[in-house]
Structure formats: structure tokens, C-alpha cells
Amino acid sequence: MESDMCISMLKNLESNDVCVGTIIMDNDSTTISKARSEVKADLKKQCDRNHLLKDFTNKLYDIRKAKNFRELTPKTISHISKCFRYCVSQNQEDTEKMKKNLLALGKHVFGDHSYCGSWCGYLQNPLKYKPKHLPYSRYLCDEKLKITLMDLLHKYSSDADKLTHLGSSQANESLNNAISSKAPKTNFFSGSESNDYRVAAAIAQKNIGYGYVTDVCQSVMLSPGEITKKISEEYDRKREKARERESTIQFKKRRREKKEQQSNHQKTCEVREGKSYETAVDMNNNICSDDICEIPPPQTEQTCKELIPGVEYAYVSFDLETTGLGNDSEITQIGAAYIHDKSYSQYLLPSKRISTSAIALTGLTVAGSQMYKEGEPVPSTSTSEGLTNFLQWLSSIHKPVVLVAHNARFDANAFCRALITNDMNGDAGKVIQGFVDTLSLFRKERPGLCSYKQTDLVKSFIQTDYNAHDAASDAKALLQLLTSQNFSEHILLQHSFSFDSYISLLNYHEMVQKNSSSLMCLVNNKVISKMIMTRIAKSGLSFSHLLLAYKRDSQHGVLRLLSENTCEGKPRVTSNKKIIGNLCSYIKDVCD
Image 1 (tube, helix red, strand yellow):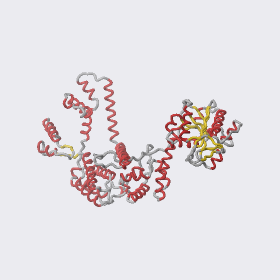
Image 2 (image 1 turned 120 degrees about the vertical axis):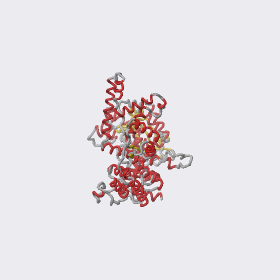
Image 3 (image 1 turned 30 degrees about the vertical axis):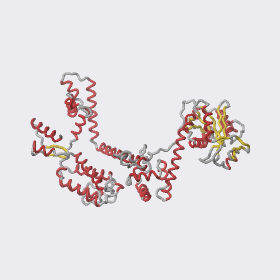
Image 4 (image 1 turned 90 degrees about the vertical axis):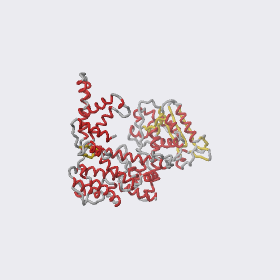
């Protein structure tokens, strides 16, 4: 069909006394042979520049697929194709120079610069030159690949006379695009009378711009209207500016960079997501657990967020007694107080031993399933039931609750960890909005005090003593202390943090801790430093994720994963090739 259309158009042009001497086309058909035999024997042909470059790149990919050269990676192919494009562009009208530089290209990427010309960076500065566009900035060294590449370049070199007179069919592609916008293939316009007018409109737009609408209206004595004129003039101005911008070196360079970034992002996603699509993958039973396991995207470090103003919060003073001071401590008593003498107290039976220091402070001990305070038995319940009862008590306030505690980070830590362990943080988030820390509040608003312990603050501002280290007494005393100072809500919220953000922070720290534990083998074997290990862990990666990335792409999987750009434009962990090389060597030994 393509050949028949070309011959038909040539004959039509000839009948209208238009002499065609040269046709610009690709190398995918026998059209030129038929045209010479049926229309004009001395008809010349010019190769299309874009089709030529695409054909060369496809042949490199065919070589990679057929012979499985490990060095012929997509990055290597991209660099060789770029060099080929420069060689063809810079040696037009000079056949001998074209031949020499094509052969020089095949030797240049293998470190042989004997054929290179002034364009070669090595000849300009041999001591500092590195082939930075090749993988790991190293020359290729596979002799079989060198022979295959030189054979391919010899074929192009033997046709150098054709390469020195290239044309471009880009204008035709642009016209096709304009026609498809007015007569899209999704609709059957070719069977209607409007098709000829649609094609004619596209040709007019191509030849004279968007002002063709105005010209057509005037030719049939219709008023185009001022708005139509303005719009067509504006479109023409935009098209002209776009042409000027797209012809600049900066635009072309940026377009190439964006294309490379998009390609790298896509390949990184393939490493993270695994085999998500493959022809008949399910029928061939090619699915394994590694294929469906997704590596998490870059994680951002979590921080606590202040509560937003404008909500009518209920500020409930709150205190906990625990089995110790560590992160794994359990709650032994919950105490809370609210206005109008509304208070709460509940003893919780811990599953672990209460530390000696905690016993000395609180007087709480456990023997079997019975809890004692100062040797006297007290009623207690399980942690799960105690948390449920406390949330029900808070719900009875019928307002969004903010828990106020002295050194709230400690109490929030123990409380939220207990909620997460008992899978109750979702229910708690519906009742509790956040926390307020009175320790930081008093340090800022009442500077210069000798002590900021709660007992000393109560004694200083209320002139009273109370039973410290009892959660219920501590909560009531804190409520009295806050009431006496009459802080505004604006000041209170400056020392607050939301419940949801704190839960996210705890989950993030737990993830980092687990990842760090899995990565310690790399530090112990001196593969990476402790600082790099921390970066990897904080980005959401464990050692199993690194192994998975290596299995999916042994050459670039780990590199793509660790150097993936975050939303801030920085590498996820590092792009240092030495660090990544050490990691890959260690992982290779582990896998082998």
C-alpha cells in the first residue's frame, strides 16, 4: 500500500509539471525500486535521519538479545547510539571522514583512541579523561562484543556515501499529527464527505498557521469575528515561540535529560515492584514469591505535628505508672482528671516484672495474679481491658480529647505502644486528638525556676504537697496546677503533638530498628559504615530488600534502588559507586 501511494503521488505531481528529483524515506520498504522502474529511472533517495538512528539502536538491542553480552547494557547502548548520532551529524558531505569516525567509534568505547579525532576527550586530556557515560565509568573489555560491534559499524561504513546526505521526514510526521487531530483514526471519517475538508484544514494549518480559519472565512465572504482572529493569532505566536525554544541546545539537552530520568525511574520501579506483567506468566507457572514481593518506596523521616487550632478540645490531665523507664515498659496504673471533679484511676496487671526502681517509687508489686500497693491488695485488670475502659471513660466527655501530661513524651510512648500492641490505636484515634507536654510548657512560659519537676511546680504555685507517683494523684495535681496558671489555648497548642503523627513516628522507629538489625551483618563484615547502614534503614530498606533487588537485576538493581531520587531530589541512600560496588560484591557472595 505504501509503495502504491508513493507512485500514485509521484505520477500526480509529474502530470502537474512538478519534477521530483529526490525522495526522503526510511529503509523499510522497496518503494524506491518501484518508483525508479515505474516513474523515473534516475530518481534519488535520501535516508531519513531519525529512522536511521532508530534502526541502529534496534540492531544493538537485537545483538544484546541474541548473544547476551553482559556489557551491552541499556546505558551502554544509549551511549553508543548517541556517539553514532554525533558522528553522522558532524560528518555530513565528507564520506572519508564519516568512514574513519564510524570505525573510531567502535574502538573508542574499548579504550583504543588511535582512530579518534579532535572530538575525543581522551586526546584532549589523557590523564583526567574517564568514560563517564559508560557503566561504572569503565571501558568495555569483551573481545567478542568488540568484534560484533565492529562488524556492524563496518556495514554502515561501507554505505558512508548514503549517510553523508541524510534528509528528514519530520515535517511529514508533523503533518500526520495535525491530520490525526482533525480526523482521528478512532472515527471512520474516511467514509464521509467531511474527510477531505478535515485533511485540507490540517494542510492549511501546516502551511499558513492557525490564521487559515480567518482566510477561509474571508474567501467565502463571511466575517471571522474578532475573537476568532485573536485566538488564531495567539496560537500562531505560541507555535512560533515553541519552535524557537525547541530549536535551542538547552531545550534539546533538557529533553534528553528528562527522557533519561524517566527511563531510570521506570527501571527502578521495575526493580522495586518485581514481575508485574509478562505474557502468559500465570499459564506458564512462572510466578514465585519474589516476583510479587514489593520493595517499599523511599520513606521520609517522621516528625510530630502540632494540633490545629479552632477545635473545641477537652483537656484531660493524664499520668501513667510503668514497670520501668525503657521503651518496652508496661503500664501498671492509669490516672486522669477532668473538670467538675471527673477523675479516673485503674491498675493494670503487667505481663513482665516490675523493676526495683519502679517499686521504690510507686509501691506497686505483683504476686501471681494479684497486684499490691504498699503491701495492700488493689483491684487490677488486664492491659487490654484497662485500655478499653479508659477509652470508654474518655468517650463520655463527648468532645475531642487532648491528654495533658508532665513530660508527655514518656507517657505518650508507653500509652501508644500499649495501644499498638493490643491493636487499639484505630479506636483510640477516634477519641484522642493528641497530647500536651507541660514540662516544655513551664520551661518556656515560666523560665528561671530551680526545678521543673511536677512536685516542685505544685509546691511553688499552689503551695501544697500531694501523694506523688500515684497516677490518679499526679493527674489531679496537674489539673490544679494548670488551672492556677490559666494558660491560653494558643500557648497550650504550641506544646502539643497529634495522636496520629505520634503513632506514625512509633511505627517509623520500629521499622528502622528492624531494618538496622537485619543490616548489622554488613557493618560487622565491614562492607558499609554504620552511618550508611542507618541511612539504608531509615529509607525503608532491609537486607532482604537488597538481596531481592540484586536477584531481579544483578548488574544495576542495588544501584538503582539506593540511588533512586526522593521527592526532595536527593538519592534515597547514596550514589557512591564504591559503596554500592562493595555491597554488590558481598551480596553476590551470599547469593552464590
